[in-house]
Image 1 (cartoon, rainbow over the protein chains, first blue to last red):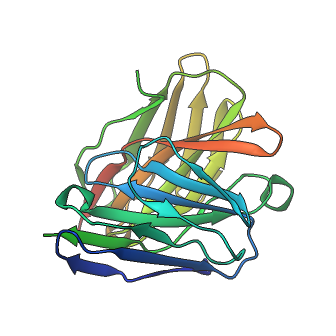
Image 2: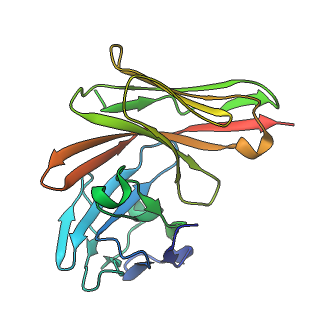
Length: 116
Length: 114
């Protein structure tokens, strides 16, 4: 069982609201990721971090922002939610290649966001 | 052309059937491949990974890579209703200096009917 947690699991919110999706892992992993997943579509990487104070944008452009102040915590924030932000957001972490030998990603259960 | 192509299905089979799930990829850089399984309302979890061409078995599951045709497959023998999930293939590529990338297919939704 992976020790990576996301809250909230489900969120319905009105347009224009600020939201923060929380992600925490207890595995001591340096690398953390945010993916966006829509039905029938690929998992798209929107943000990643290779350590504290390191954040990068992923392949898919996103209006969200992330921060990495602590190793275990990687929150994602939308300053002003819009209906186009409706999606499932998956957080993941991975250890070094020396640790896992595969770069395996451990995923949280996801946060399903609906913006009305 | 997308880096990893996967037919999203859905695929519905009777219990006990042999299931074949397939992906193609376009980039031949050093890499290996993973299969993730995602149950409804859960995050994906690693099922199998394979480095090289040929087969890798784990119980009822066999992962197969054909690098000459850039084709990867996952076979499930004696499929069970508990195998009902979305299966995502992923290509791992290493870009040096500790950086690597995992590129996912769309996932194939499998239903095994009792």
